[in-house]
Structures are given as structure tokens and as C-alpha cells.
Amino acid sequence: MTEIKTPLAEARYIGCTADELTTRKKGDRLAAGIDQSVLFHRRGSATLHEDRLVLSDWADTGDLVLRPVDVISVTNEYTKLYGRFIGGLLNAGKPLIMGTTKAGEIYLMVNHKTFMETTDNRKWTQLIKTWLNSGD
Image (cartoon, rainbow, N blue to C red):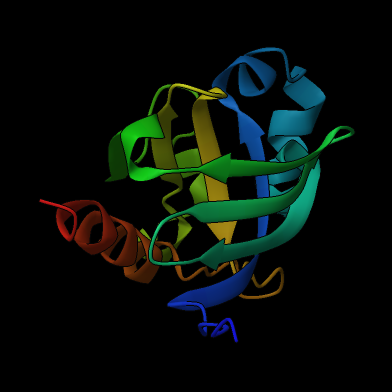
């Protein structure tokens, strides 16, 4: 009988690629000062397993499944594409950014709360870094 393992972590996400952020219009960026989610059109569940990170409903073709080998970098910081003006003055507004071999650079907001404009991005950045280092 196959044992079903409980995920290491699971949460809702909103996300987009760096290329998608680049093409956002000025009006979208201004609106993001009030509600960051207007910049992120991908939505689903982020599920971290021992051997993979699954972003459900990433594309019309389905989930984005990332194995540790597919993740090049993980940061939680403001960038030129997503700065403090959009993310707010709190560190909780910094995006979780992953460099990947499958989807390029992706920006995520994990457990984004619109009214407070807070996320669990710092927590998830640490979870993913720990996950990546657990295979060493």
C-alpha cells in the first residue's frame, strides 16, 4: 500500500512572470499601489512537497511543477519591476522571486491579504531555501 505524505506546506498564491510584469501598463502599476493583486493574474495553491513545489493552475495547460534542480534562485526583495511604491513600506509587501529553468523568473505573493497588503513571502522564502538545501 502506498503511503500518502502530507505536504510540507500549502498556501494560496497570486503570481506572474518577470516578463508579464514588464508589460504591465502604468495604470496597472498605479492601481497596484492600492491593491497589489492587479499585477498578478495567475492564481492557485502553492504546495511544497519533499521532492517538488507545485503551483496549481499556473497556466492554461495546468500546474507548474518545480523540482529542486529547476530552481536557480530564491529571494524576497524589491526590484526595479516591483518596487517599494507598489509593495508598500512594510517588508511584508516584498515579492517572493524565484529564478526557474521552467518558467524563467517568477514573482509570487503567498497568502496575500488585500486590505492589509501583507503576505507570507518571508516565511515561504525560508521554507523554499530549506527545501532546496535539504537535498545536499
